[in-house]
Image (cartoon, rainbow, N blue to C red; front, side, top):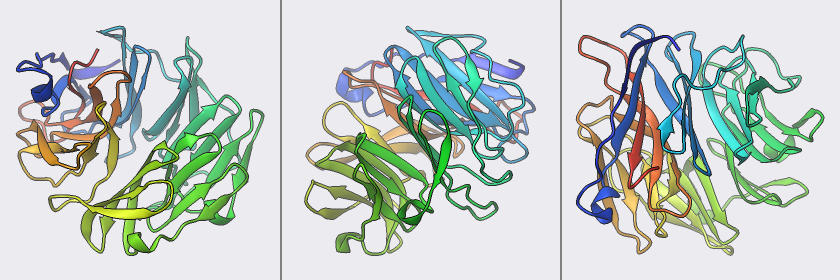
Length: 343
């Protein structure tokens, strides 16, 4: 890979496990291309000793997809090659196993797939060129959901389903969805800006819980049929929503910024990403008991975690994001962050 700067920073957790969970430290910082380019990783997949980070270079311009790959405690340099002809940047990824990982570019309509050995272009659907994708959820080799909600500058590509042989567009309640999470293959929750939808194994149905009236959805995380979280804002204030299998309740989030992503913490709580643009930057933590704390990320407003993923069986998590560029730079560098004893 052609880099202006490539640096790996590994910091000791120190101070015991509880303290490690309260700090996110940079593990890899890469400036792709010019120091004026805005590079970032915005999606992360963790699978049995592997961690994949997806994003791109020049994300404020035409964009070029970029990845980073860590396997068995070591960065793979260079990472496995992406298929040629990709444009924009990789906006979302999902995995069914270490040998079956799917990802999609924001623009350009490219779906790519890792088979355990190489990245390959997946079959393309009949979506319109120039439309945008926002999410992907892979449940099996023959059950993949692709989401393309509309944005301020580009039309949405819509919701599509892969059956193992072809993509088909799904309309109705599935239209306008941006991202989804699965409690099981027959129990999915998905969100759009003002939409909350549930898939029961046969079809999508809109949900309109009174407790979440005025909610603007940004992310959903289904941990089980009786433990589903949504993140965003409610009536302009940052908030989470929680479903216990029977009803939804609203949960206030401290700070001024809307919650945009979440992941498990390994102890029954949640990491909640809500970047305010103020320093020091950080990630919010909500304990299983409902206590909120702030975990520092960096001293520049450009040091941000944008997505996170729990390392199963541990109290560690990986974060994908961006960081301040080298001295003299005006853009951002793509960055990988870790909390706890990341492998």
